[in-house]
Image 1 (cartoon, rainbow, N blue to C red):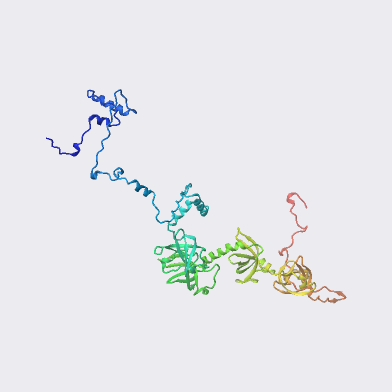
Image 2 (cartoon, rainbow, N blue to C red):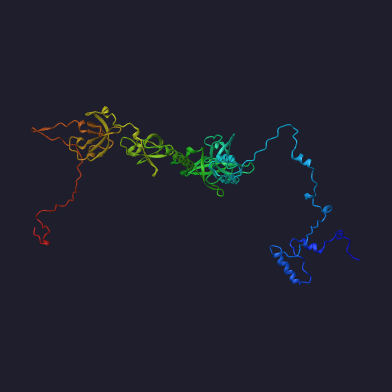
Length: 527
């Protein structure tokens, strides 16, 4: 009696051995005889599998039995098997495929499927619209810009941004991407309008508000303690006092110093005029540990002057007339500020008159009108003239003076051949040495001195060459001749210092004559 339990599967009818062998598609030959060796049977199977086509024998084929399908019961059934699902009646299938419209409204027309031909996946019309909007910008640049907009902007970055909104004292601007920043309105020199492009400096990101804190270039910042002060920052400082080295200033409770050379663009003599004034300065040096703070106002002025200078140089041309302010007087000329650019008036161009120093005509701080003579961009020099803005003194000279007129003038220069006398601003004449006195004059300086007022008579006027001949002798009364023994004596000479000798006297006897040897005896000469 068998110990195996009763299994329903064992009750099924097992197929015959021949049916099982023929059920494999690879087996077409009849089973080998049991009398053949095992090695021969194995070789036959390998060769049969390796061949591409089955070997056809002369024996008749064995019928292939249909595969036996096991019946799945209960949970053994596959729910996804469509063959096990019941099919719907044909009437239901037609109703689902062709639903009846019970609303009475017209059915919507089917949507046309666009003909997609572009690489971007859009239709040709959409591609054309995108190209028109982007212009020369590629999609790669747009993607790169979008990705870059998500990056945080580094503090200290200087950018140009568009103003999006102005609310009270706050100016909102649009930065890269979706980032926005805020600046103070009164820091701008000119109040911007919405849509204007402004240049700003990013100070940092306020993560609570999600806005960047912005600063206007050149505008001062608020200072609460030493942590707010950095080199290069612009702050407002109140001048509290002065000493021999410069100005003492205060920024809230922090004390600082402005050296004398950093107060203005020019030398400052009186520091007291700056006391109690608020000056905008740049932080030059800061050391919180040593409580040291050095500021410079000159850097702000130089920065503003450089901006004006670049704009003004584009406008300046030779021959223009400009108004300026005298900033400095030197022996060789005067410097004039034209509103951001300095030029030089040479001493010979200060006035039509002969001047030794520009201070004779101009003073520091005086407003003058000048003419631009030359602009040298390579050497960064501008040559100016003040006298060319004045009326030429020789214009209408015939109406001012006439020959034989006796006028008074001032001796401006003495030469060996005579003396120059100024009879009007810009008009000088020459008194020849022979016209200084009736007697013979050995030296001009023995008769007249520079700066001496002299009465002269006009002998000739040449407007073309701008020359006037004068005579001082003609204004003097001729001396009366003295009669002695029926003979006319010579005119008495005016007392005059003795003329300097060309060769100074040695005090020794003169050398020469025939009473001594000539020195030729040594070479065979007997003179």
